[in-house]
Length: 234
Image (cartoon, rainbow, N blue to C red; front, side, top):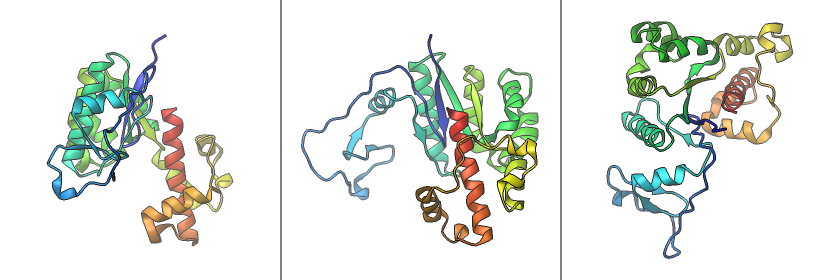
């Protein structure tokens, strides 16, 4: 049976059933490049410092079931790269690519499916789904990606936790205090005692995640987000 190859933007890109393509270098040297020598559109393989063509990048990504595509949310160039990767992999693996987005929340999956099926117009989707999940001002950054997915019948998965769950998680002292319905929606492998993940979050967000009660609630929500997206992608 042919498995789907999900592309998870701002989360992960999943590719299945392909042999990994290894990149080699002709000589051993520092992989770190002088940024002033890079041109717009250059693709750098960070472990080796080697410049890749777009075709080489797609060939390399094709060897993985999961590929994370990071972004700065308001950077139009990042979203252009995401769309090019999605298009390239969809062309290589027709009917085997799916898109997952951090920006969409699990409770809206049915509405996302309706939008993809053409049963919901763009304006209604932005008003009732995208605005509630991520905010209306961000839609132009992701519009071409979602429209490409709809036009090419690429499944889209809403990865993130519902806003009602994360808001409730902030208000309680312990997650055991959540209403049963919300508690049942927590990711199965949620671990709030991982010191490495906590240090990672503190390194990114600094003072927001210090050891105060507010900081504990902040970290709790970050962990719910991360574990929910991982669980949905899996």
